[in-house]
Length: 248
Image 1 (tube, one colour):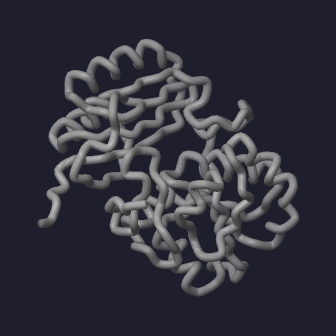
Image 2 (image 1 turned 45 degrees about the vertical axis):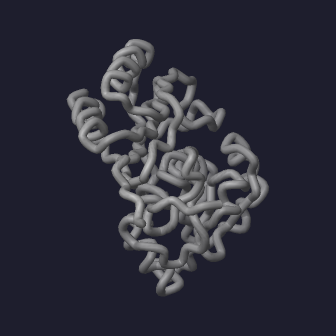
């Protein structure tokens, strides 16, 4: 008997100044509890990062309410479905960074690195080069244990244990990227966004971030050029290219 997937799971982030993060924390915590949602919301002066799950009506109501804040009106969550609630509780936290890199000068809200959509990345990988004829490499900015669940074929993997190690890894391997178009990627886009800006500032010439990360790629391009599953930080553990949970 097939399970019925009635729980809507969303992930979203946005780099935007939120100087009122502590007050926003209280407001969002109360609202998520009222709607009986579970998951995690991280707030910082640099923006918001969230992973939530619950009945579809409640999740969409919460997103609609978030978008009433002019700073978050263009928030575009990535969606997947599950048969049960993958989170045990609801946490809303204020942090120094919504994704820790320990480089406060990297501020995506002040200007993003160029982003490339999933369909373009697939086309580049199909043809083996970008539209200017340069070889294309994909750079996995995730932690090593996440990469071990799955990644793009031939992706560069520096075996970092935490994202704050990425700057040092780049400095050690930067020469390997010379003359190539580099597409940084991660689960949902947040890490590869900071990584792409850091690479630009470090002098890597042709750098892009995969818009929306692996989850958006699965949604728009399926599993082409990707091997394995995508690790997610909830009880589902990993999703296939159909955005459904895969058993370990």
